[in-house]
Structures are given as C-alpha cells and as structure tokens.
Length: 301
Image (cartoon, rainbow, N blue to C red):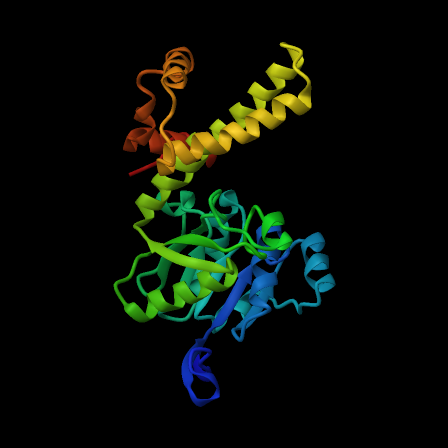
C-alpha cells in the first residue's frame, strides 16, 4: 500500500488530496466477472496482478492487453485478493491461496453464499470480506446513450454496492471500499452490512423474489401472446409501461393504485402467491436455499 497525491477537483490546481493505492490480485481474471472487474481496475492507479488458470481465460486476459501472473506471485504481497471465481470453486481456491497470504491481507469474494455457508478456508490473521453490486437502479436518471445501454453496471451507469467485512479496523474497511468502488465503477454509495445480511439480500430479496418476478413477467408476456393471441408489440408495450408504473407506485409511492387496480391486485395475490411466502426470509429457509445453490445437502452450523 502506498499514498500518492492528486489534484483536488473542488479547488483546482491549488489543492491536493491524498489517494491510497493498493496491491490488488484478481483470481479468475479471465472469467466473465473477472474480465468485468479487471476492465475497471486497469483504469486505476492500483498495482494489479491478474491470475487465471484456464487456457481460454488466459487468452482473454492477454487479448485485453493485460499481463498474466502466476497465482503464488499474484497473492504473495497483495493487500486484497479479489476472488472472481464461481461459488463452487471458492472452497478449493481459498484452500490454495489463503495459506500464501501475508498477515493482514484481505480476501474479497463477490457473492456471500460461500462465505455465509462457511465453505471458505480462513486464517486468524487474514480478513474475510464480501461485496456485491446493486446494479443501476430502475429509477436512475440516465443522461447518455452509454448509461442507457449499461443495465448491468460497471461501465457507464452509476450504481450502489453492498459490502461486508469481518474486521473493525477502519484502514481495512477503507481498502475494501476503495476496491469495491474501483471494480464496480462508477459507484455512488457503498452500503455496509454483515455477511449474513448480505446473504439475506442476495439471494433472498433480489434473486429468490425480484429475479423470479422478472422471469414470471416474461412468462406472462409469452402467455398473453401465445395463448391469448395478443399481438406481441401491443403486449410488450403495455407490460413494460405498466411495470414501471407498478414499481414507481409500489416502491416510491409516486401515485396511488386505482381502486379497480387494487381489486385486480388482490385477485392476483390470491391466485398466484402462497399465504406463507414470507417464510423465505427465515434463517432455515435461507440455509435451504443456499444449500441448493451450492449443491450441498445442508448448511452446517
């Protein structure tokens, strides 16, 4: 870790502010997420090492103009190691690299499932952290074609991020926040939670519920077109517009739903939603969900 100075944009050439730079290792740099975070890290002043085991991934890294580093060399002096590998690989990957890390190093995973399930190799003097992007909000005020095109985030559209760290050291939290802001840039806010809370958000809130609802909307669109015979352009237009209204009214309270709409909503809830659906927020249901995602018989406590 080192400190440099850069011109303060609020004061012009007369002011300077300290900017910390870190040694960052990206493991799985040639995978889908590895390429995303590496594309952003290369724009920073951090010293970044890129490690990738698969030949196809190595080809993608070198094609992007980045130099490959063997994993032991990449992690040896790293302040923070970004594990951009699938959940199912995190157990063996951490078993390999954690013993090689310097004391005080941080291991950052990009999804909470394996960390919450206790599948990661840990060390008392190595800090565990997790981060996940929020993705650009449906209500984001976009101003450029690039921002409109960036629905996932990490390219042009600003987004928030969620982070958790098992340390009370503000300096370690600062390293995680700087890394999170770099890999998910442009980032508006970094929200801090516990690892368990992050697991409750992802998958329960956003995958189990929100993504499921998104897939259900697509199934409903197909049903309107293929079964009811509605022209696709008409069905798609009314669905997309009303989805925005539904989210704006339901999540922001922009306008009240009409009385007739409320009656139709009640019919939909009675016909589609189970009375006990909120059980997915219970700890035992979270464990069951994550066990299925991680291909485990159960989450051990």
